[in-house]
Image (cartoon, rainbow, N blue to C red; front, side, top):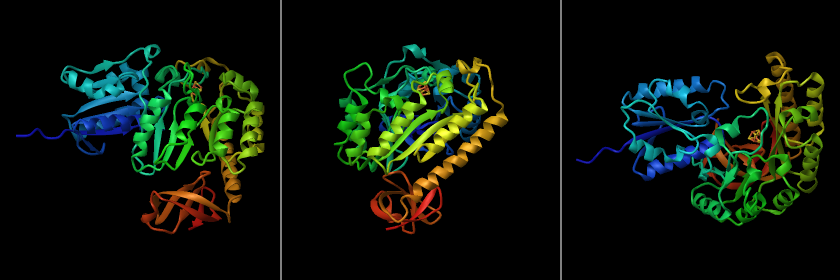
Length: 430
Ligand code: SF4
């Protein structure tokens, strides 16, 4: 009698990096004969890839572990990811967890599951983050049209609010040759667009004679992929070479996402960011001068300790005057083991909410204004999914477009004339 196929279910919390890593681990299981099922279904193994940014990380993990055990009380539960690296002992106290793997070990989950005795209590396998040096390239495979390719991990910066270096370790990446191998594997899937992902992507190649600029030059000749985007890059690492190259490339899209965090030099200093507002402004001006149609997204944090009304207004006015397209607004939240937590000048929750609202309104205004500029023009759109009877996709410069067409358009690129601007989405005609 043959052994029944084992079923494995994954759930991912947090960022795109986590999603690409889960996808890589799940492909490993499938290669070894497992059947992948939905996390809501009955499985033999449940894998939870956690995030440390979620404030209620343990609450969320507890809920998901309980859910898994309810579906199948005899299942094994594995917890991996940033929360598993940072607080393995907290997770070990949650009933029903069989194995917890830190940053270095998560890609060996399958081996560890084979080796451990699942009836002997929770097993924690975690290396001190200072000793984590391995890099495992990954790519996501959840969406058909777009895939997130992880080319770099970890961060050597010491921003005073951030726990990512504690959870993911030092900056590291693979050689260009190996990264290209993975990219070519990805190019054989259905995906037509790649989003280059990492923790501090501009640091690719650090410590070697290769750089992020060298990588994008190589990726530009990748067959089987039509579009490449750079997920987010620190302003001090977004060099003129990179901008000039993207301006001349047909594959790299006119779309940049650059974290600013604050428009006050005093706050940037307290955050230990590696630039001042002048540099940021100069980067935006450079992009716009050679790629006038480029979409520029900006991350900003409100309510950092010591951010007075004057500091916030500096940020607001700075962003208002900059030629950018949208904002990702984060309210500062205290993280254990960071320097920012010890700083005075705590901003009340009410003030954080109020400032966040103001920047959300500014973001809507910026986006609407950016979209307006392209009404009555034609842009290439990659169609991605169907929602409320409309086919949705993004232009090269990241405008979300909806058209009255059928599913047949999915995963194809067409020239679309943009018409009515609804703010977040613009109507289009083929
Ligand atoms: S650059 Fe700063 S905010 Fe970004 S991951 Fe590194 S330490 Fe964290």
